[in-house]
Image 1 (cartoon, chains in turn brown, orange):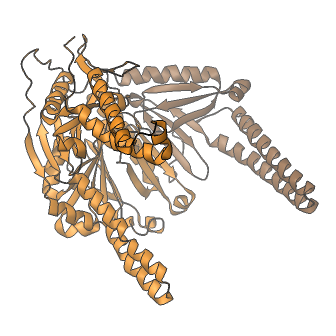
Image 2 (tube, rainbow over the protein chains, first blue to last red):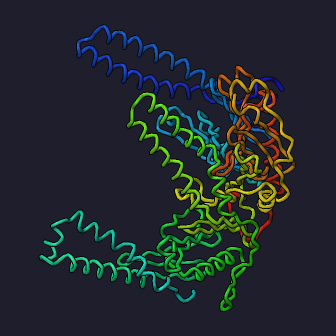
Image 3 (cartoon, chains in turn blue, yellow):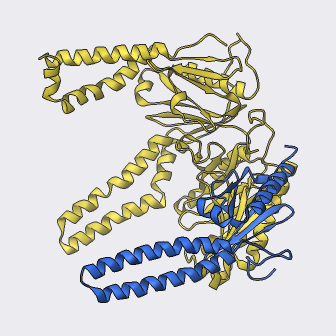
Length: 163
Length: 446
């Protein structure tokens, strides 16, 4: 096994849909724009146009940085359905890998927020008896999410059968 | 349906005594002059008498209105309420444990509160107050026996399940252990430091503050001492029974097979005496607000061999100290300079064990059959050092299992192996998962 605990095995990570990045960028950009506009307006009205300009440049900078970061973050998310467990990997700076044995899943949620619905995406979340389990797969097309949920539920039932 | 029963006849007196002073003070402090005016210039004594009468009447009626009985399904029902009638059902198949507590006031009358703990229900509506201690114990035995599927005979009185006392923590021993905790010692050491500084800087207010700081460790040690006073662990057919507390007496039952994870800790100052403390995660309502009522400390302090014996009751055949632990690599010292020597991880055929901590070294143990999920995490600094941490998720509780800063190349292997063992143990129904009638079939944690 390589030095990196987060590499994919032979079957590789299944990436999530890039439209997730679009969604997150829309949210981040509108937020940055709103705050920047507000700060700039206050500074200009308050009689500090130079500072307003600095704030504008700063705002644009942060916006571009977030744009780039979100792209990387979304590309870092992946999952793998293996024989006995589900793996979810995420994060760039703080990386994490969650392993959930199928037999431990208590329920599988599929969520779709308004923006997600507009983009044609869904989020699958796995729950176990532990509150600390954080296995969430965002950015799945609804049909994939539905299939994943049904399959995970079926695996879960199979694996915990006979108890 | 069985004939309805009532709580102890002295109950209205106790609830009245509990409520009256508050009301009287409230009326006179908040209402001040308005109170006597409102009551048409009655004297203070008359107002107090009036309040006492009202409180007494209310308490009495409330008592007559609270009844409990078993319904046709055999579940416990509690009806209460003066104007709005409440009916609560305690579904015995979901009963987790039954707590008996004796608040100070109730204790003076020889009474106790009985609180059936049911997954997903708040304790407020189902607490029976007050019963005589004897009745409470009897009812608890009855409830637990019913929950265990042993239908109590209609008439034959159910005897409290026989028990065998395993450990009794002597009070001096408990007090010594609390004083010798690193947190207490550090707080006490803080005082001369602050006072000396105050003397040098010539700020007498600071000196007084420093002395007042002593209150903190005294309160903590005192509080813990009262809470865990007379700690007794006994084995009974419905599980491990814990009894403790001086001012407020507690009694908790840990049903067999309900323990999800165990932590054994040994603060540095305890080492010469060979003492340890044992804490557990017990399955129950996830993240419930009344989480502190669930058993957590099952042994506040005991010599290691005694702790081993108790541990053996909750996790048969497990000895965490006999497990070969894999040490964290030398690079871990740059991330965790104080505790890196104590970091370790290992597993046996039935449990996963991690060790960590500096002032309070701790061993965290989780059976494979109780492993919910596994997480491997790595921050930027850890990445530079080539280490990663492996978390093993258990049900909510004080015990958390994490193998800190292990070799990055091994982390994935350790994590994957544990997830695999969790899946296997689940299917085979491995050890640490004893079959027990008191654990209902519908329990999702099984």
